[in-house]
Image (cartoon, rainbow over all chains, first blue to last red; front, side, top):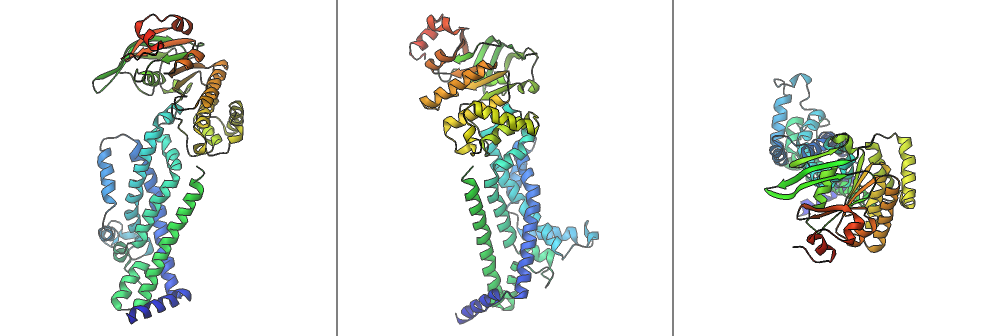
Length: 233
Length: 237
């Protein structure tokens, strides 16, 4: 019990003193996960909307596939991205393995299906409500993509949050493609895993607390934004 | 060149083997306000959607004087029983419709101001459309349709979920739109409303067009027993 309390004390000290090593890890984690979510949003929002709005053969299959990809194990994604980026892989020439870019790529693969699947569901519901009115105004499915994404903006924040939550919490993919290299690709989750196995509970615990606080902060902020803007629309 | 008249020739629509409307032949000419009257489930809304082109008939032919197709829908507008508003301001909802018609931004602003003033909604221009009352939303839907300056305006039971005061405002607006030269085609199951607004009645029952003619003659002496029963308030099934 004493060890845990000591670890807590040291963790708080590291956080309050804005320990350089700690801040570096936190910053890299945020940079990687936020970039991945931004890229996944650029792909996933229109993709999800298109799946909801266009009729094409295999549409149901695509929707099912998208939903199942939501639950893809990060280690498997890590492995696949690793194979693609490794020296002998098809993208090996770019030399991206064990860089933050590789971690961003892996997280994009993990997050895009989440955003796309949630977007598809939301846009499909909106289209059912608006279809006749939009068609009457001369707004067909293609033109409806930006319209419905904008109309669902408050709910879509939740989809982006779900994506960020998944990206910031996963450890398997970034561990494999990033390699957990100190000062280069060490993220909060990979550092926690490493420090715990080394027995340095203070740093692990400090990072764990920061991770939770960040998650709370981001969700809280989104909640407030949603509340403030959504109330009036 | 006007797109009217609209001709329906032996139009029918069936879904999963059930004939919802059938054998409808009628011509809708520019000018008189046409009211499609009938009990619930008669096929009034369906007929309106067929005319507007939201649904394709499974039998017969529907054609405007200028032919058919989506290009002609740009010269029509429709107001639904439940107004569908986007999560934008009242003005933004009208602006969206005008943008779809390709109106330049500058003209849009002028047209929005004008139509909001005409519908008495000017003070609500910047309010989010979704927080307006049901009656205000329906008037906004009418303002949005009016802004498009359609040759034909279809209205599907536009006052069915409104209170009497809001209903009156909506009816006055429909009247103004009619006077501005737009052909009105409206469904209702409300006899009083039909008496107030109709120049021409299409009486529908069980998916068939039972009577079509001038409103005055229809209300004075319906030609069929079905219409007479409906006018007397006796359910016809």
